[in-house]
Image 1 (tube, rainbow, N blue to C red):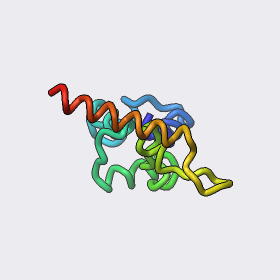
Image 2 (image 1 turned 180 degrees about the horizontal axis):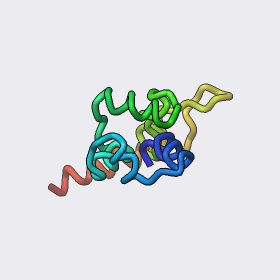
Image 3 (image 1 turned 90 degrees about the vertical axis):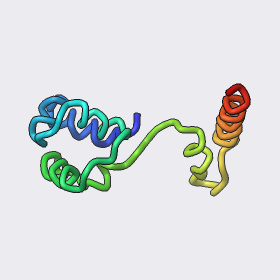
Length: 104
């Protein structure tokens, strides 16, 4: 998932995506795109979400996920080095992209 903090804040408040969309005055699809990270939205929306959920909007906008390049860029806390798994995932992702370009 992309914006787990936003989803968690919504669930903690006991609200559905439709209820949040209605509160913001936007469509359900628009809100779903915000929560999934497919769309960033206007600052006014994030201000309203911050007020609604009582969570700083920087935290709500945070993106999480299993994207291999993001994983490869994360450093291991103790060593400051990239993990072997993260490096392997980045290489696999690059190979897939390369083969996709060659096939097209």
